[in-house]
Image 1: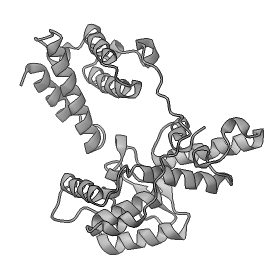
Image 2: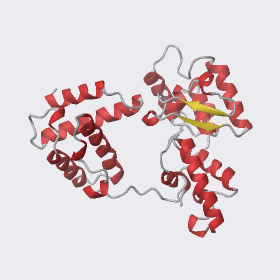
Image 3: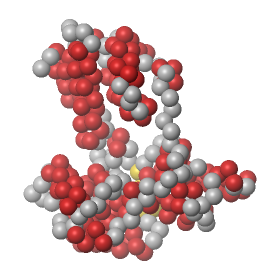
Image 4: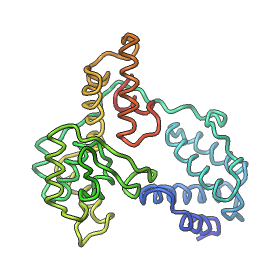
Amino acid sequence: MDDLTYTLRQLCQRNRDGSYTTQADRMRSLSLAARQLREAGFRQMKASSLKGRHVQALLERWQGEGLSSGTIKNRLSHLRWWAEKIGKSGILPADNTQLGVAERRYVTNISKAQELSTGLEQITDVHVRMSLQLQAAFGLRREEAIKFQPSYADRGDHVALKGSWTKGGRERTVPITTTEQRDVLQAAHHLAGTGSLIPANKTYIQQRHVYDGQCKAAGLSNMHGLRHQYAQSRYEALTGWKAPTAGGSSKSLLDATQRAIDQRARQQISRELGHERAQVTAIYLGA
C-alpha cells in the first residue's frame, strides 16, 4: 500500500463522520483518488500533501471519462472532506459550477415509484420482509430499515431515527399518519422485541447481504423506489392532488395558492425523507 492510500485510511479511521455506509463510500472514493493520482504521476504524496493541482488533475480525468455531474459532485464532496480534515478547505471552491461541473438535474417527471406486491411473498427471511414493509410504510432507506429498532423508534405519533442508522448521521422523525403504518410498526415490535431487524447472530453487513440476496431471488429490484412511492403518497395526502410524477399537474400549471401548498408539502416530505433541501424532492415528485 502506497503512502497516500495508507495515510488516507488513517485519516478516515480518525474521523468517522456519518453512517457506516457513508464512511465506506468515502474510503472507496478516496482510495480511487489515490490510485488515480499515482497514475497521473504524483508518487510521493501523503494525505497532508493535497494541493489544488491534484484536485484539478482528478477533475480533468473524471470529466474526460464522461462521468455524470452527479458522480463527479459526489467525488468532489469526498475531496472536500479530505481537504477540510487536513486544514486546507480553501483548495476547493464551495460552488461546483466554479469548477465547471454542471448542477445535477433532478427533474424527470418519470415516476420511479414501486409498491410491494406479490414479490414480498417470496421473501423467506422474516427480518428482510419486515425491513421492506418499513421502507414502504415510512419511506426509509435500506440501511435505516435494516437497523430499525422499534422499541427506540416508536414515539406514539411518529418514529425517531438514530443518526447511526441514517445517511450523513442526521437524526430525523417521520410522522405516523395511517393505520397501515401503525400495523407495520406493531408487527416490527412483535418480531424485534427490544432489538433491531438485524438478527442477533448477524452483523449489519451480513444482514444487508441477506437482504440483497433475498430481493434478487424474489425478482425485487430498485427497492429505493419504495421511497418514491412513499413521497408521492405523502404529497397527495398533504396537498389533495397527485404529484407530477404520479400523473398530476406540473408546478407551472398551479395557481398561487396551490404553489404555496406545493412548496410546504415538498419541504415537509424533504424532512421526512432525510434531505436538507426541498429541491431534491423533484427526484421523487417531479416539477
